[in-house]
Length: 533
Image (tube, rainbow, N blue to C red):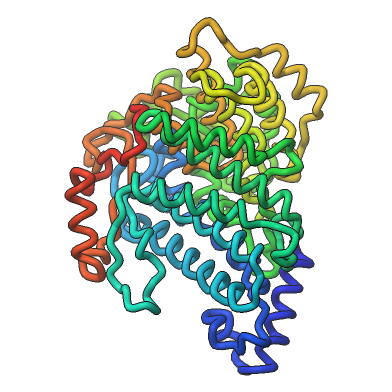
């Protein structure tokens, strides 16, 4: 990615020096550059990074969904009280800020896409317009999955005078997004111009089409509980168009901290309190240990003994035998919910002032603290597991539920090596998949196993919002909510984030309509496609 970022910065500076002399203004508003000078391809790296940044780190994923869906856990005390939002559904001082991050970042990212597309249309760069549409749909579907109803049909139209766009129902937005994605993919052709400055696929149009159809497949599968007919129609469109065919096709965005494009989750996990507070959940570690999953020693370690060692990023013990997941919903405050009162509490490490009450619980390994770690946007493993889900429901797919499941499990293990740490060989991955075949004794048994694997796989890839979304859709894995004193969701796992408070003043009519149509603006209001719980 470094060479592409350098090209972006160098190209942008050259364009600016030709027409404006103010890089900051041009970087914020590309329309200020002369259209004959500015190449809209220069915006593409920023468009790519904006999406990756939205789905990671303190934007919400670690602070909310990682622990709502019980992939991670935290005792949420000391300096990291902000994890109370996630592990216990209890507001911290910055909860209102966290609530609006995905909304604000998502629409800002979509606005940047719109700028890129507008400039590309003027230059006749049809393929760049289509790639922009893929990013727009991916971005705004992510926002809708988090909040529910959103402005879509009238969004991004401020220049046309629409400053208070109507909120489309999630059903309307999804219908329009799938249609827009379908049209964009159909428009990609060799005459549409080359894609340059592409940090994701290096301008490979075939891979962009595979990404677009893979996004279509995932969006279609969101609908299986509420509109099976539309779901099946778009699943077939996606398969016919061509989804990811191997791990080489998947959308894994490299990071580049030197040039300001660091992995946001790694930024969070390098904070001293987070290094100590953030642990893998009992739910996930037990899931991996039950089948001797070879991912366990790659992702989990027990720090050295004592508080100082637990706050250090020094490598810990990754022996699978010593890994213990921390149960969700506990603290270190001395009351009934203190971690020492958790069932099977393993004890502390260290002594005296250097004691670490959670020192024996497993934390993420160094691959998750690497600021150059990639962002896993959408993987071949996830697509194969979604195809397994579709096949188990009777949809027509290229293989059987069992074959798709096996391919998904293998890919989940192999792609883990893209983090840059230890890798699992294809042979070892294939052997593990063969030893752990899909349970086909019933459709229910198959769907449970498939979707538990999606939960674990997306969680391990640090795509926590997707783990949560798929849990909402499928109902798997079965999770026991935390009912901590003072929680904001009635002791239930949140199924959405609240609309930003700012919308009550900037778009009151749209907000009122959406809230009424959805049946309220609460943490547990169901969005349209949420049929799994």
